Image 1: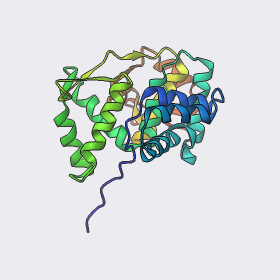
Image 2 (image 1 turned 180 degrees about the vertical axis):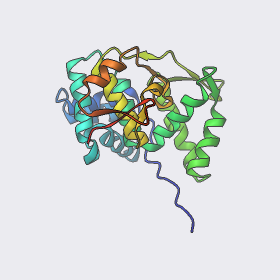
Image 3 (image 1 turned 90 degrees about the vertical axis):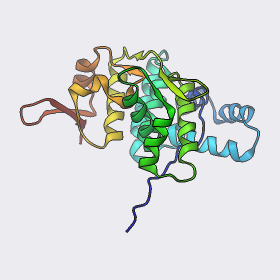
Image 4 (image 1 turned 90 degrees about the horizontal axis):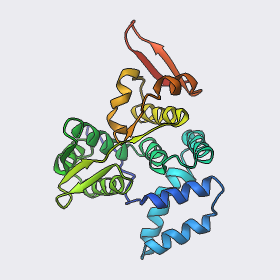
Amino acid sequence: MSTAAPQIGFDRFIQLDWAAAAIRVRAGVWDIGQLIELIDASHSGAAAKKKTRTVLNRLWLEPRPDLVDFADRGVRIHRASPEVPISVLTWGMAITTYPFFGKVAEIVGRLTALQGDCASAEVHRRMAEVYGEREGTRRMTNMVLQSQANWGAIDRTMNGKRLVRSPPTKLLDPSLAGWIVEACIRYSCRPIAVSSLDGFPIIFPFQLNGMLPLALSSATHLDLRAEGGRDQLVDLRI
């Protein structure tokens, strides 16, 4: 019996200002018409507009039922601290909503961990191992990489052949740090060792900056536990 390849889902290039507009709509600062105007000004075809709105809906405007509270808490962080980078919040929603986006982020994070850059061909090869050599895998991987570059996570050099990590964004808000840790757990679908969080590959564009102790102790949606007397694990609170 053959196993079906995982779904892709994230099938559009998403500019950060479109995501920022979607957050503002969910926060009640903008109305939906302003977002539609922004998208219409950037797209020429009806199909392209619809697909972009679909991705933005899933990210912020109409998240899955199990992510509604998570998205709302992200919006509350944005409203309480408007200086919080939109890229952090949208990255968190993207890795929890779209496993395909998360897998690209994880692979890029691992491949660039030592030297700060990697060949994009290696990312495509590893994504094909997971999602298959089917139509769309390479193109959608490029969509994710293009989006990640627009969000300030990477630079695409040598005509896109190499990916270079951008300097990480330091997270200075404990509530934001706890929220992004929760995003990592939701993506991974398992508890995570606390000692691994500082260099967790899927959130390579961000630096927790010593926020972990306060973030984990104050996060009402996270639980800490010891396992076998070894490292502490952090998991979602049931």
